[in-house]
Amino acid sequence: MDQLLDLSASEKRKFLSFAASPYLNKHEKTLELVSLILEREDARSITEDPPYLFSLIFPNTPFQEQLLHNLLSYLKKLYHKFIALEQLNIQNYTEELNALEYSYTHNQWDFFNNRSKALSKMLSNTSSKDPNYHFTNYKLNSLLGYHQSAFYDRTKTVHFQAMMDHLDLFFLQEKLKHSCHLKANMDIANTQYELRLLDQIITFLESEDSHYLDDPIIKLYYTIYKTMEKELSEPYYLKLQEILATDLSNYPYEATQDLYTFSYNYCIRQINAGNEDFKRELFQLYQKGLNNGLLLENDILSEWDYKNITTLGCNLEEFDWTLTFIENFKNHLPSNRQENAYNFALGLWNFSKGRFDDALNALQLVQYTDVKYHISTTFLTIRTFYEKQDTEALMSLLETFRIYVIRNKKIPTIEKRGYSNFVRFTKHLVNLVHQPYAYSSQEFQKKLTQLQTNIENTAELINKNWLLSEILKQN
Image (cartoon, rainbow, N blue to C red):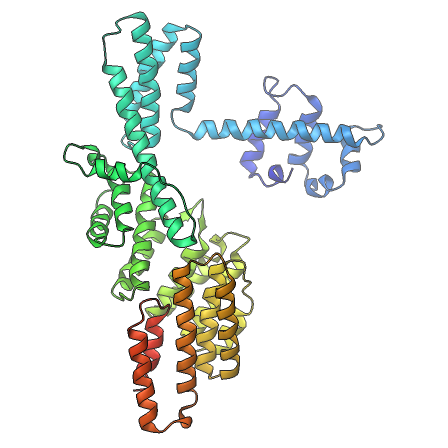
């Protein structure tokens, strides 16, 4: 019943009309229950008291738990029908296809011919050639082809060829799109998937006799996939930016979102690899994504985008814009992650402004619900202790983090080495910078130079730029 109580006012009116239809619901008591839940202001408290709820539906009848259970079960099934119909209403072509398939199987040929022409015209006027468009064309031409073969001329090939062409386009668009998302997931979350046929598909797309890269969506996801390859990825990233600069109105919304998202991800990988030039470019991409609404999904902003934008804004010293962003977009975060993301963002902003006590106060409110939250918050706390020269707290946290990394099975091995090296070098840095009196001036500079060389020569190292920047401050 929580789903019903959480419906918007317009959705409640729709469901009430739905439940009142004798064709869809012949159970009078269910309609009474729907009316009670959707129309009474105290509905939530009533639903939490089963005997009282029962008495409202079945007055002058002793409470029967099974009878109430049966009624609620019927209501649940009715709600499932409702949301299925609502989904049908927003999906392009689904209603038309279902009607065509019914008329085909029931030999209603006048209706079939009339509606197939209408659907063909609808498709011909569609600008976005997305997977749904190709799937619908595949199904339509399948019905037309087999109808023509059975009743007219089986030597005609136009519909069957169109059927196969659209099936190929549907498959390639979907295969490449999901392969991109799963490849990203494998790189980020240390998961593993078998992307069968993908190598053969890529080879085929790159062959001279293939024309499928002329399809904008296939070209988009092929280019995205190539940006995730470790070598020769930059030319493909530049191609993504060329696509971004074109008119995107003919792309489906989801593809446009992916165009931005994977562009962000490429910039982030470059920044993590030490290429600072991508910071301003990424910041501008994020601002564009916020301005055109593509960063929000159903008015929800990902907590990781929220964190990345805050981090980048602070790094680029766009403090006023960043604080406004933190406050204005807090309510767009997922409700169950809102406080965590907001407190981390405030901690980062205060740290960047040199307000270290305020930063620690905010970071203490962050709960470690996710590996990335744990690591990000730990890094920021380490840097805050370092700035405060709280050596005891800093060394204790570094050792705790070292053990956490070793024991956590969700962190990829290569990342573990990067984190472990960070802990090792940070301890060396702290021992030097926070205790300079322990060494002569010459010995201090020698050790500092050696530490800098070791850091520069270590490939697998997280936060290398921060370590090097702190060493440079000592020169």
